[in-house]
Image (cartoon, rainbow, N blue to C red; front, side, top):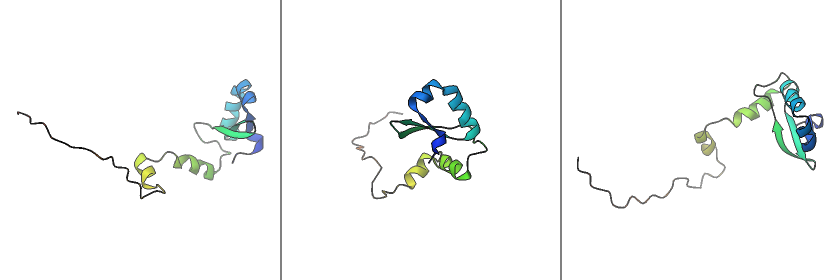
Length: 94
Protein backbone atom coordinates (compact mmCIF):
# COMPACT_ATOMS: atom_id res chain seq x y z
CA UNK A 1 0.00 0.00 0.00
CA UNK A 2 1.32 3.42 -0.95
CA UNK A 3 1.05 6.31 1.50
CA UNK A 4 -1.49 9.02 0.85
CA UNK A 5 1.33 11.54 0.31
CA UNK A 6 2.44 9.49 -2.68
CA UNK A 7 -1.04 9.32 -4.23
CA UNK A 8 -2.05 11.46 -7.21
CA UNK A 9 -5.47 12.06 -8.68
CA UNK A 10 -5.47 11.18 -12.39
CA UNK A 11 -5.95 14.82 -13.43
CA UNK A 12 -3.04 15.99 -11.24
CA UNK A 13 -0.86 13.12 -12.51
CA UNK A 14 -1.61 14.14 -16.08
CA UNK A 15 -0.93 17.82 -15.46
CA UNK A 16 2.29 17.19 -13.49
CA UNK A 17 3.71 14.08 -15.17
CA UNK A 18 7.33 15.25 -15.02
CA UNK A 19 7.06 15.88 -11.25
CA UNK A 20 5.30 12.53 -10.75
CA UNK A 21 8.11 10.67 -12.52
CA UNK A 22 10.79 12.56 -10.59
CA UNK A 23 9.10 11.73 -7.28
CA UNK A 24 8.87 8.09 -8.29
CA UNK A 25 12.64 8.19 -8.86
CA UNK A 26 13.47 9.95 -5.59
CA UNK A 27 10.68 9.06 -3.14
CA UNK A 28 9.49 5.67 -4.31
CA UNK A 29 6.31 4.39 -5.97
CA UNK A 30 3.55 6.91 -6.72
CA UNK A 31 -0.10 5.81 -6.86
CA UNK A 32 -2.56 7.22 -9.36
CA UNK A 33 -6.19 7.30 -8.29
CA UNK A 34 -9.51 7.72 -10.04
CA UNK A 35 -12.43 8.73 -7.81
CA UNK A 36 -10.28 7.87 -4.77
CA UNK A 37 -9.54 4.31 -5.93
CA UNK A 38 -5.94 3.34 -6.68
CA UNK A 39 -5.77 2.27 -10.34
CA UNK A 40 -2.06 2.46 -11.24
CA UNK A 41 1.39 2.83 -9.73
CA UNK A 42 4.36 4.64 -11.23
CA UNK A 43 7.74 3.44 -10.00
CA UNK A 44 11.29 4.08 -11.07
CA UNK A 45 13.04 1.59 -13.34
CA UNK A 46 15.65 1.21 -10.57
CA UNK A 47 14.60 1.00 -6.89
CA UNK A 48 15.04 4.25 -4.97
CA UNK A 49 16.70 4.50 -1.56
CA UNK A 50 13.28 5.00 0.05
CA UNK A 51 11.81 1.73 -1.28
CA UNK A 52 11.77 -0.98 1.34
CA UNK A 53 13.09 -4.46 0.68
CA UNK A 54 9.49 -5.68 0.99
CA UNK A 55 8.39 -3.42 -1.88
CA UNK A 56 11.36 -4.55 -3.96
CA UNK A 57 10.48 -8.18 -3.18
CA UNK A 58 6.93 -7.60 -4.42
CA UNK A 59 8.32 -6.32 -7.72
CA UNK A 60 10.67 -9.29 -8.01
CA UNK A 61 7.85 -11.76 -7.56
CA UNK A 62 6.18 -10.35 -10.65
CA UNK A 63 9.34 -11.03 -12.66
CA UNK A 64 9.33 -14.82 -12.18
CA UNK A 65 9.23 -17.14 -15.14
CA UNK A 66 6.02 -18.34 -16.72
CA UNK A 67 6.78 -21.90 -15.60
CA UNK A 68 7.20 -20.73 -11.98
CA UNK A 69 3.95 -18.80 -12.24
CA UNK A 70 1.96 -21.86 -13.33
CA UNK A 71 3.72 -24.16 -10.84
CA UNK A 72 2.67 -21.83 -8.01
CA UNK A 73 -0.97 -21.92 -9.11
CA UNK A 74 -3.52 -22.24 -6.32
CA UNK A 75 -5.53 -24.48 -8.70
CA UNK A 76 -3.37 -27.59 -9.25
CA UNK A 77 -6.42 -29.63 -10.27
CA UNK A 78 -6.83 -27.67 -13.50
CA UNK A 79 -5.23 -29.45 -16.43
CA UNK A 80 -3.41 -26.88 -18.54
CA UNK A 81 -2.32 -29.26 -21.27
CA UNK A 82 -4.48 -28.91 -24.37
CA UNK A 83 -6.30 -31.91 -25.79
CA UNK A 84 -4.69 -32.68 -29.12
CA UNK A 85 -6.05 -34.70 -31.96
CA UNK A 86 -3.11 -36.34 -33.65
CA UNK A 87 -5.43 -37.97 -36.23
CA UNK A 88 -3.77 -39.54 -39.18
CA UNK A 89 -0.19 -38.68 -39.98
CA UNK A 90 1.01 -37.85 -43.45
CA UNK A 91 3.33 -40.23 -45.22
CA UNK A 92 6.52 -38.51 -46.33
CA UNK A 93 8.78 -39.78 -49.08
CA UNK A 94 12.34 -39.19 -47.99
